[in-house]
Image (cartoon, rainbow, N blue to C red; front, side, top):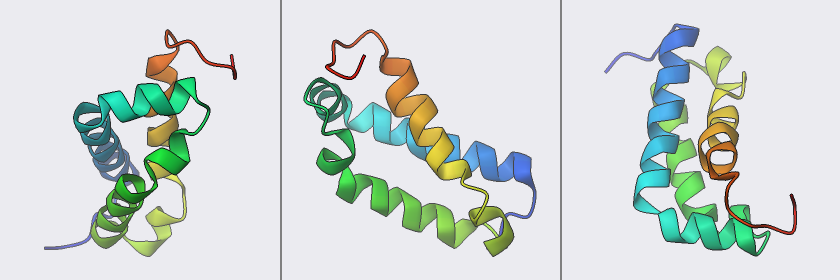
Length: 87
């Protein structure tokens, strides 16, 4: 499979991976936000997604942090309704 070479496709892949993380780990995400421990509680899943993302996009695009931005948008911003000490 050829590497993804466009920013738009890299963003879409990052968001798809983050969406899957959100879909399959809803309880862990909510608990992680409530306890201000999200990235520790999902470390294994996040790194598995990161490895998949890195294997599919060109190195130039990987370093633009689209994956990390997608994690923030989908795992955190979309859960603004969850009570947390952080906000």
